[in-house]
Length: 232
Image (cartoon, rainbow, N blue to C red; front, side):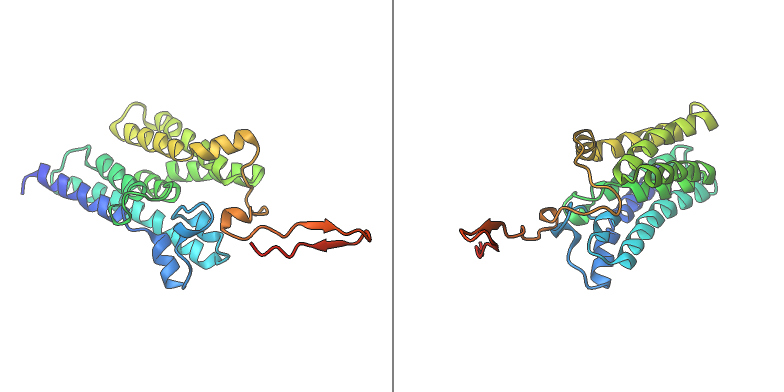
């Protein structure tokens, strides 16, 4: 089989692998609601955590990261063995990542790609992946904003790659992934600038999760406060 055809098949397989939503898999395994029906409606680990089931969120996180790692690891491992072009791992990295963002199985409406991107980076280079994860952890633990941590880590990843390798085809792929991550977090960035972005472990907005608003308190003529009985 021609190397170019093998590369095309590898890219297609990586995209289909990326299209598997572990948020939905976890929700069905643990008997939870569809993550697209509550919270941010994003099929990702952070939104699954809003269900209150930490095990399902961890399963989602590891699954989404593992598919990114597996696709790039296999492409890197077998490219030379089968005489595939040097750019094959980079194309596979992009395919599995964008498969998560735009999955064919979910009508091309997927997650934000943080965990999958982390898996991709770890497969490309362990130290690059760890440096990026360390950046995410530092921001997340100090400032307690998951979205801000993702934005800073996304911006840092291509910088780390350039410092390590200079100009390289894989660095270009990392740069594209980073720009896509920032684009997916654009609404989070707007909320951060407006001061309305929720912090990690902070009180969640009840209405964002689909909960009913609290009943208002009204004062009676006697001066006593009573709860409204409006059941709308």
